[in-house]
Structures are given as C-alpha cells and as structure tokens.
Length: 473
Image 1 (cartoon, one colour):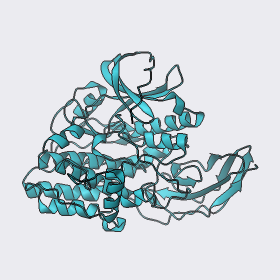
Image 2: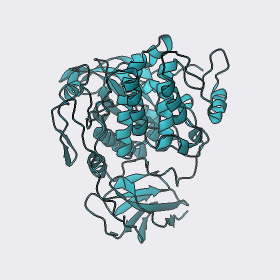
Image 3: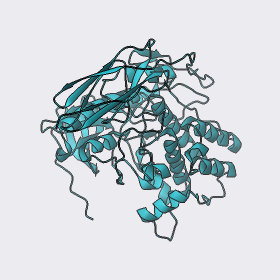
C-alpha cells in the first residue's frame, strides 16, 4: 500500500522550515531551524483530520507530562509545544539521529556498546515508571542518538494516547516487541509487559532481528504473533554474547508475566552484572529519586493522562488493538540520580546538550522539588523511602451531572502531605492528582464510572467502590 504524502508544513513564528523528516499514522515530522537560539529542531505536527477539541486538550496534557520527563539524560527533549495558525498541535523537539535503528540490521554492534545503550535507556524507562507513566511502544526505532552519540528514548505515548482519542481504538502496539498479554488484549500495558518490550529491544540490537523473526521464513504479523504466543526465544547466534545475557533476556521474555523481573531496574542491574562479567566498567543507572516522581506528577494538570503502573487491571472495556508502523518522531529529557562511572562523551548541541554536559554538578529544579545531582563517579544517590503506614481509603463519592459531564467529589479520607489520588474512570486508564474532585465527559446514554485510591510514595492503596452515573439519552 502506497504511503501518503506529507502534509503541508505549518508556518511557525521564530522557525524556518527546511524539509520533511518523516510521516506517521497521525503526524508528520519536519526539520526546522529555530531562529533564536539558532539550532535545528524536529517539529512533530498532528494531521488536521485528527484534531478535535478533545485531542487538543489531551495534547496539552501530554506535553506538560513530557516536560516533566524532559530532565532525564536518556529521554528526548521537548523544547516547546503549541498550536499552529491552521489549528494543528505541534511539538518542537531535539533533532536526533535514527542511525542506531538502521545500524543493527547491517552490522553487529559490539556487546559492551549494546549494554551501555540498554542500561541508559532502561534507566529512562524506570524513571518514567516511577512517575506513573508507561511508554507502550518500546522498540529499537524509538531509540535515537544525539549529535554526540548519547542514546535517548523517544515517543513517550503521545501518538498512542492521541490516536486512542481520535479512533476509539487502543493503539501503540508494535508486534515484534509486544508481550503476549498485550497482543491478546488482556492489558493495555503493565510494568512487566514493558520489561518484555525492553528485553526484546536489547535482543534485537544484539541479534540484528527481532526475537521471533526467523531468517528465511515467513515473518508476517500473524506468524510473529503465533511465535510470540509460544514465547520460545531463538538463540541470538553470536559467540561473543555471554550465556548469562541470553538467559536473562529469555527470562525477561517469559510468557507468564510473573516469571519476568518485577521492574526494568531489576533487568538493568542484571545487565550491569554482565558488564562486570565482561570486564568492562559498569554503566551508571540514572534513575530519578522517588520524591521527584511523586512531586512532578502531582503538579500536573488534573486531566493529564498518567498510565497506572501499580496494577495490571484496566477498568476500561477492552477495545481491539491494531498494529501501527514506526512513527518518525523524537521526544525527550535529562536528570541523573545514580552514578558508578564517568559518563562518556559531552554534548553542546543546543540547550538539551548543554544541560547534559553539565549534568554532573548542576542542581535540577523540577516542579516544586529540588534534586541535588550527585558529584563524581563514585557517588550513588539514595532513593527516598519513607514509612509504609496504612494508606487511607476513599469511602464516599458524590456526583453532580451537568449535561454530558459528571463532576465527582469525595471527602478527604485523611491523606498526608505528598499523597495523591489515583483515579480510574470509564474514559481514562489512570490519572494522578491532588484535588478531591474530577470531571468526566460522556455521551448521552453513557454510563460514567469512577474509582479512586490513594497513592503514597508510589504505592497504591485499596480502591474505593466504583461509583457510576447514567447520563440521560
């Protein structure tokens, strides 16, 4: 099937259009030159036929969420977001290379290099998880390289969530790197399904092919899905890959989620042990401290869509997923919390690279919290853990209906400073906020439901009974 032509690039004040970078299912990406400060940037522009009032609202919420992640050194930086004069939302992002996703198919990448990339990207995924965000599309083509070769993870769920609003289908599934439970539509994503996708991505960089792609045989989507369902991972086929590395990747791609590592950080630590086995210096695991994740998310707008990671249960009725092709995009960030080695390479590519260059000693101000960044290669940041007292439960939820909108309110069950409400409704998977009120929009005749729990230091308490309201037809 022929690919569509790119849309017309918008006129953006302060930016000069250069050329098209690529096209995806829901957006085009263009190369622009920013006039001040002068630099090249990638601009992702939504297609006009995808834009609705709901999409604009979600786009703004997602951009705000990405701004929080944009402090991590291995997540692509978003400089700004806006709406063009013709009404299309756009993101201005760090301009990076897709060389890594092209390179693994034509040459063998050395094992120590793959491990360095994997540990840095895994640290970014773990940091997002601590902020309550699932990526939902981890794969090699979403790992880009800065001008100085530093890997950054791109496309943090923006295309998937926006497409969900436009098409009423759960999107964002790339079959070769999707866990069996995601392909079966048992879940829209969990931490352990992301462990699978991360392991499959590391395998791909080592093997030069996805884990269930068989050279010389049919590799249609149906073939891949059948092999993934059996979860029999083929050997990588490289003598220089340690057997311990093969075993840990196979375990991380176990068919049963409970048989996989509990978190991406667990797998990152295993990859660091392989580095020690190979006699190379361990790559630092750059993971945000717990206080950052709690503070940054609670300061977002109430309607920011934060994908819950504490439970695999999704209270939204299941919708069949469809696979989507690679979206040429880049989105990103910078923050450091642990360090056991000196970072290699420096970066002077615009504001994002300047931030990375001085990350060792500059304090990062994020939301309402200040994180003091560790000095020196021997310093390991301490992850903040506080007492695990009983988490209160929301017991009474009231509702007021206005047209097709329902405002739910509830009494404070006794939350402490820093606690937040984790909300699931018939319209969203999960969102976190501090306010004891939430509005859900529906359609005439819909039944709108909500359930609420208290989130304390990343731990979710017991959920309230579900409160449902039927809208007049």
